[in-house]
Length: 171
Picture 1 (cartoon, rainbow, N blue to C red):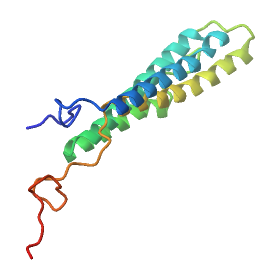
Picture 2: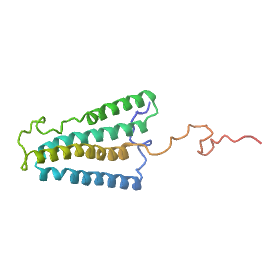
Picture 3: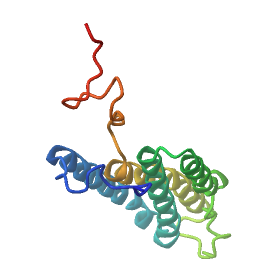
Picture 4: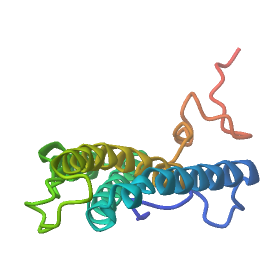
């Protein structure tokens, strides 16, 4: 019985070099874009809350990407529905705004330089950071773990094109 979430259909086959190159580029792009998204937290005086909110959001995005990749790997309906349910559970904290971007509710009582206006800017930035890092976390695990090809036809079916197995009508 094959594993439900195999990495490649044929583990002994070498990975396609072009696919690996594109996957690495996706990973580097997401890493650099994530670093650029979190950089303003230092300027706004909220590196701690930025790391907390951004870290959880990035982790949620990576989990969602891995779950969606798992869906492309299996043909078992129960596993597909379980992964969809887990995906909804991963998205739920994002929908509810957890962890809180409210600085005072998050345990950060120090108001950044600039008063309440700076605090409002920081809270708005943290909300935007949550969504940005969540969506940046999805592509790499999906590209790395997902199966991006049509299913192989079953042996002996009309779509099977392997030598000696074609079902041609007799003349």
